[in-house]
Image (cartoon, rainbow, N blue to C red; front, side, top):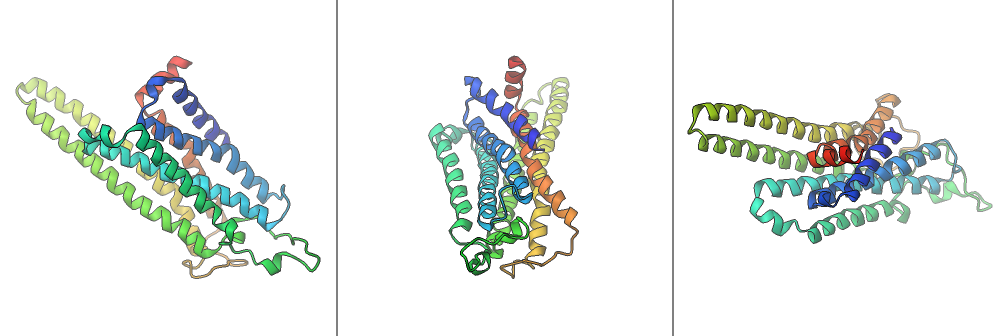
Length: 298
């Protein structure tokens, strides 16, 4: 999975940077998304696996740092996807204002805001918002006592998990669905208006109607895949932590178990990280210009 994330996003980064005509405001956002997903694949996944296997030792603070960086990069990915949805919404619903609002400068500000906000959130556990009990991690000689297992729930506080997962992903899901639904409805309405204007020739109108109907359904499928991929890839993780932290009514869950088998957690994490492997194909190589540039490069 990590290899697929690195290869797919690495290819997209290389193609975008190698072709000047691909340097549009939309592709700047897609490039930022590819960079964050690339870092998740080449940095976060190996670090988490290594931490859980005890490669870095069993210090709770090392474990906390690994998961804090993971949270920051995952949040960058999600916020950048939201920025892309906002940019597409403006382009479709307010085309005359798109070039005024979505200037390269404004897009760079959006990208910077996504990265800075995510970095701040990622630093919060290391600044004290965690479930590590100081007295229980240091013995009388001042040495750090090893944690039994380097896992997210062993070092993260319930309130922070609630803030990170339901607090961010549920609002993102809602806004995602609203924006892309409005994009589709606007596209469908515009198709109907164009069809009426072109009804002068019945034969031409019939061909045009069939062609536009196919494009309309294709757009619907793409939007459904984009929204569905994000929603369903992260839903199992949110459900797991909601049950593990007892509806986020407890702060520390050492020794607590969920009503779900552990394979459900492994499946959820795989799906969540798998979203970063799918993103370059949904947002990047799904673009005709990007595909042509890649074919030309090969």
